[in-house]
Length: 131
Image 1 (cartoon, one colour):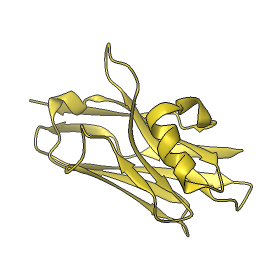
Image 2: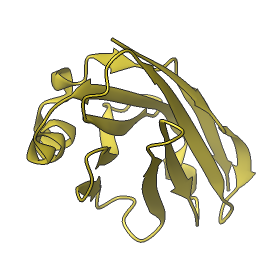
Image 3: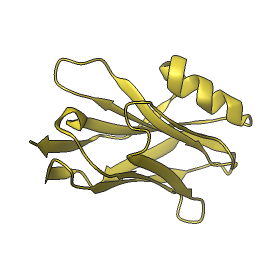
Image 4: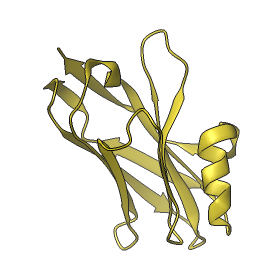
C-alpha cells in the first residue's frame, strides 16, 4: 500500500507556471509507476503524465507535451509535475496515483488505457488558470 499526498496547486494567470508534488510513503521498496491525472468540470478523467521509479520510462499526453514535465526523486519518494505556459483549459483537479510493477512498459499502458491499474490515489489538488 502506498499513501500519496499532493501539494502545489493554486490559481495562476494564463501563461503562468505551477509545480505539483506527490510524496509517497511506501511499505515496499519495489519499483512503481507514478501517474498524474486531471479532471476538469464536466470532463472525463485524463491521464496527463507518468514516470517509472525504476528509470527510463516517462509519458506526457499530447495536450501537455512541450509545456509539462514529469520527474521523480527516488531518495525523496516524490514525483513532480512542472507545468509551464498554463492555459485555462488546464483548469482541473489534479491527482497523483501509483501502483507497483516490475515492468516499466506497464506504466505506459496503464496511464493511456488501464487507469484501474493505479491502486493508490492521492486526495487531489486544484489547479485554476484564469484567462
